[in-house]
Image (cartoon, rainbow, N blue to C red; front, side):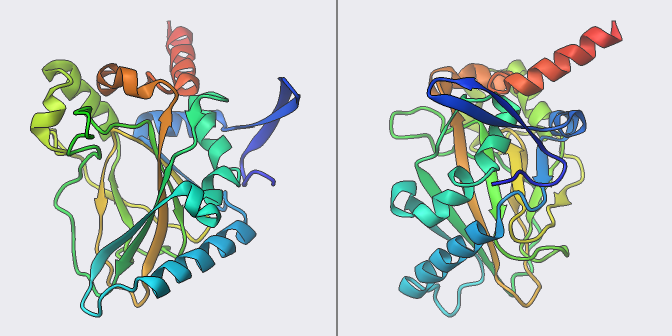
Length: 272
């Protein structure tokens, strides 16, 4: 499958044959570093999106939302039991695009898939964003991860169509907060660290667009005043070894992001 517009592939040797890595350009790396997210248009091929759409139709048919349900309605499935949904990430260029931020071969395929609906009419405007991972996991560890990957499964070109809301740059603000207060402040915050928030943005796009967001980026679900149900599929991706160093990661936003860190270090070196 070909990468989406503005992307290129680099081939290199690997055991058992050549590997193909998808490379983001410098502007995209800088945008992710500064804003904490990227929207990559048409990163997932149409045939993969179509197969996943049919799988979502089956989920809704087998367990329909109640007639009074408005706003968010979610389905969670093991990736191994939902291959058409998992293929949005691991059967398309999307996984390579995620690793273009962290380094080839660094990420683990997620075990779970989330199908997120936003059913109109839902005249909600979030007052603030949050970070995921609270309440903690059964072993008491914070439920952190490296990156949120979302594939838009319906048109969201206009605002207030069930769009994801993000607060750009808050991945850096959250990291500063945890450096100042320590990683255990995560538990007291309950997903809402008391940071100063900038103006939010609504993510817009169409089916097949890929959203890659830093774990520490503040985000939330918005309202849906359109005539259509918003559909999106989300994956929470961890870098190998992330669970053992989650405390460090909260204070160092680039701990899991080798490619972005290297880019920032080159920028600093060039400025000296």
